[in-house]
Length: 140
Image 1: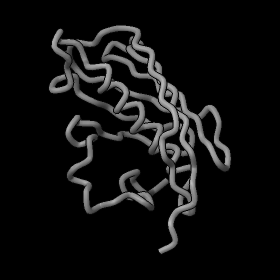
Image 2: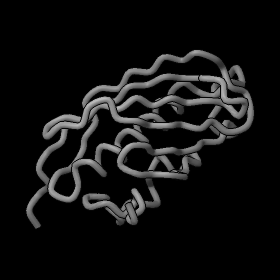
Image 3: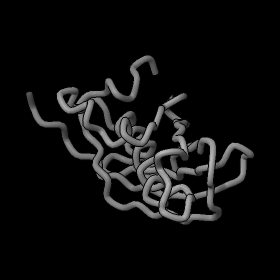
Image 4: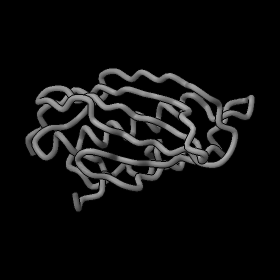
């Protein structure tokens, strides 16, 4: 794919500077139809005990899964989150977490992805599953 995920149809560039991904430091580093990878720093995304916030894990997972679903649905359909499930396996206190998103199911009306988040040592920190509803894009 030659188009960056941020440039996919349906992405509102008018509010791009307000996206949560920017505030959390999420970067998409690799993408194709079968695998999407992104990173997020722990610094700035901690909870009061100094661990990476579980909600930040969820944002990274949903971001990767939503981009992957949008790449599958584009250009005629849009992806919207339907269900997100996260299991937090280990706390991360520093560095960067990396998420790898792979498809479980890619259909006409739904798409489901597994997102595995690991720390810098390659240890699994979180496993997430995202299902998106694929709806027709509004006619312009």
